[in-house]
Image 1: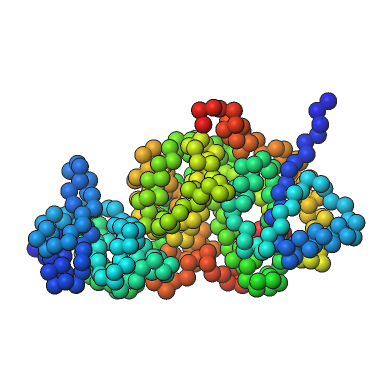
Image 2: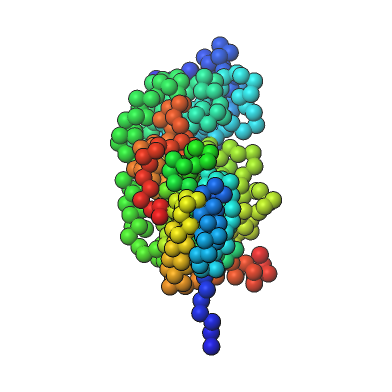
Length: 276
Length: 149
Ligand code: SF4
Ligand code: SF4
């Protein structure tokens, strides 16, 4: 039995036994290689679930908004390791109870979906630990290095050009599982912190604050980067923040549901060489 | 003849240490550059990086953020939290090419009026040499002059 059949069967069992009220998975998209989220509430529809190498989106984004979990019932969701880390962060930030999330875990290896054993976020702690020791993406690091080698004003020029393309559609925010605020800072208008029109200065402020609010929380699922209609390399800026959290504070986002958020904690011996 | 460039510097300070330090500088009649505009806040923990961006947006050429020395925070931990945030925020500013030398951080206690005076004079001198923060101010000018926005 292939992984897709196996997971459809598990989804059907979870639904018909009443263990979960809903399964969030992937279905056919608008083109052959695209997948879109599918919400299955009854075992008879599990044939709509697809699982293959194109299932890249982090579906944990659908758990928190709209009070989906507020009735205390369980929901099953297809998640890659990045999505499992998101569950841990959401739990650590008191946004959900990890006991309510049944994980249908998988990873993509060589373009194919492969099963990951485990049901609860805590079952994957060893796996996430090994991802932490493996370190952040060397490819992204190479691109980030290229930027870091530039002078500050060249870098400013690079981002000015990139951010000037931003149309403030907020797709990067909507897709992100960590962007669950009911009222985003960019929507606050008393006082108006960020220029809301899509001119370059406002875009600078928006993108800087978006990245800052995700520092030590982003799991590099790539959702924002893929959804940006004008192809701003948001992955680079996210990567730089993840690197700072890891190198300076030993923080790898989403290690466990008990992990303290990196910017809501401190150590007395934290470095401060830059403070006069 | 053109006037020499006088930078605008915004200092976000906590009321318990740095503000008191600035006050001491004043009552001791120490002279410091008048380029600095002080914004007093309850604690460095209350100083959001948004404030720094807002100051730059509104035309500051330099920003100083200052509070109590570690261990001296009136609220015990505010400055430790702030320090982590600054570390991450600085990395972000550097990565996006916003000049680090325009954004300074310091610990100044209520007894350090002299340190406050020296620091303000030093920063003002440095930023005067750097010149106006044109990169940002040009972007702001675009907003103000183009009706399409
Ligand atoms: S910031 Fe982007 S890459 Fe990071 S968790 Fe959010 S959507 Fe994923
Ligand atoms: S998705 Fe891209 S264009 Fe849309 S708001 Fe985010 S950065 Fe801007």
